[in-house]
Length: 402
Image 1 (spheres, rainbow, N blue to C red):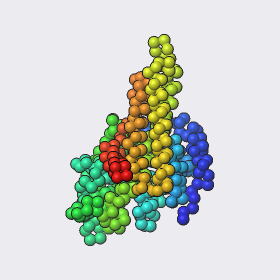
Image 2: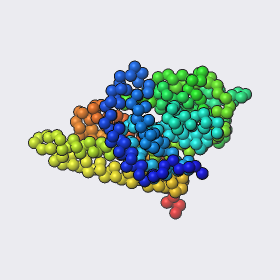
Image 3: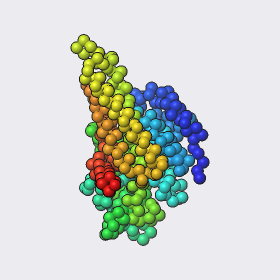
Image 4: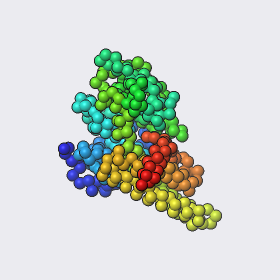
């Protein structure tokens, strides 16, 4: 049993909200100014380190840690992730940012004591960052069995060769470790036993970060997404996670909770956009009337409110279901949430941008970047179509067979 990390879980939401009100919202422009002033956009933003120290001192740290390791249930964490999601960069303040949360859970669930000592401890301390290298440019990586990167045993080492892309955090100067998925047994007749996952320090010879990638023009600095080449990269055999052939199993264990975390944060984005739109609607006049008095604006506000509420309830139900039966048995609800929430957020944010006129497209407001986040979340951790395909098959079987 792990000692509880939080003495008063029920009070965390109020404390987190107070911290955001005092330390985050007032400094959003300061963060942007520091980021844009840095010679290297993928370096550490000074304000981030200030806020991390404050959050840790106030006990608002590692809020994502699951209940089985002394942390919170999914249902307890969901409202906190929503609050953090209202400012895109704020999860890192509390050491709750993707992909590190998922990677830390991988180390907790599947890492050896030595791997946990070397990598999990500094990640939990917020001293380093990490990347999860699964997606590849030359195959449809939504089918994880397609990955072509090779992980070949050679004596006391493994040699990795392959090309990955859209690897979040790979550009960040604080990132020190990659979790790489590839094929160690490509001829295995069971396609789900061909893959392994292995730890590759970023500074290993043969690791080359080729270029940053943008999403709808955003580079998502300082974390960034990158194309990465592994060229005859040699690491010790003990860097393998859980053993050869367990890569698909690890991916399934990691990506389920990660999907729901993205959805929790996206609800915060959509809720904040709705609040912005409401304030905008009573401050602007067109054709002799406040925007708020136009029927089309009221309809957009009403639809957006209803859709956010529906998505929030679905997400909370999914979180509760995961707590009751585990992520594997809750995959139907996780899929339903992943299909629903990013598209909802994209739609709601788009309406709210429209209410803001041309300003809604600019960096003067958070909505354009939040729209980009919602849109790429429809691809991240599995695209909508894959989840709909799997969920549809499951639901048809459930009800057709009685």
